[in-house]
Length: 453
Ligand code: HEM
Image (cartoon, rainbow, N blue to C red):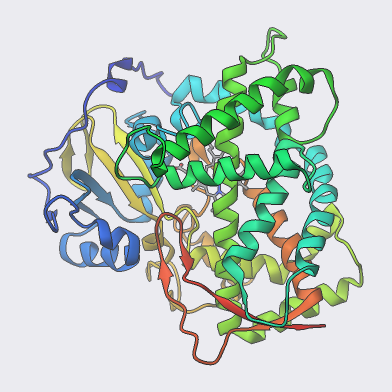
């Protein structure tokens, strides 16, 4: 049996280690370091570090020293973390802590295990069957309403559609309702606030607007908790309100609030990014658009049932190939709890570690022609994603593995099913997609010319 590892919580208040001078690497420009490369060329930054320094190197961004770790073996060690050397909470606190305090990624070890239970019922098959029924009319309405007389900017369109899906499925709100619009705005303000470099909670700044949005969202959740506990609504938030601990007590209100807010965040931009990437690749490779449409037509149905999802094997392969090339959460972060070894180097305690997902997803040791869009690499005959347990990890792995991965696949399939039924799509002749990696990856603009079917 594995020996239990005792963890002294002092690591939670210790400052970051800023000295990685014994590890080879590149510091970049004063203050911003390699920050711009994180945003615009994360994939090449990782490759350059690998070519020059190997799998473990030092990098600076926004005055912070990071250990960049590449390679499926190293990732396996960090994500599974059998020795409890890494804190996820301290990895994400500086980026998410101001707006998503106590979200699930900001909890470690036993505390994390308990909090994850709060969410589990919301992702059981029974609940998922309810969500597909609820999301279908929302998506059908949004997709049918697209104006085809001019190029449709896909990014804003899909973001708006998924905000409405979120309001319905996550919070149980009616879509055409003033409160929904108010909550959607609060949520958008929070996510703008997350990106602010000047962090003063004062009116008129994006940080201040974000904080106001956060307070509004929290107070909405707080007021609703007693009502949801008495009711039997089937949205995710209501499931979480009714979840109980082993002794039959409900979880604390704050735990429900913190987890509900974080769930909205974790779900929204990632699925928006995924659909953007699918569109980017299937406009560049129209044969895959036709293969997906043929599959949709072969089902000969107007709406998808939960049991139909497994029949959409082509859309499934396109989904995985799009998020292999452009992982929607492209960077994972951790902080070391104690001194440990990585890639032959001694890594001091409290060192921030970052893992650029695109590197393993494009590593030629595991993938044939890794830069090529080739969904069939996920076919049962090829299964390239199984060449190493951690060469493909868009949803992470270990204790913090994405709890919403099946929901994400379902949402993408339902969206694509209805979009393909309604429209044939392409980009203007002169359109050249340009990928931006941060805050979450997406092609800039992505105008679609739509032809109604
Ligand atoms: C394609 C879409 C998505 C991708 C690529 C994605 C990716 C990820 C990744 C990589 C992590 C782990 C991060 C780490 O360990 O550092 C994660 C965690 C998480 N995701 Fe997702 N996600 C997606 C969609 C969703 C959706 C739709 C939901 C909710 C409905 C969701 C909820 C969560 C939550 C709550 C966590 C934290 C889990 C924990 O700490 O135990 N995600 N996701």
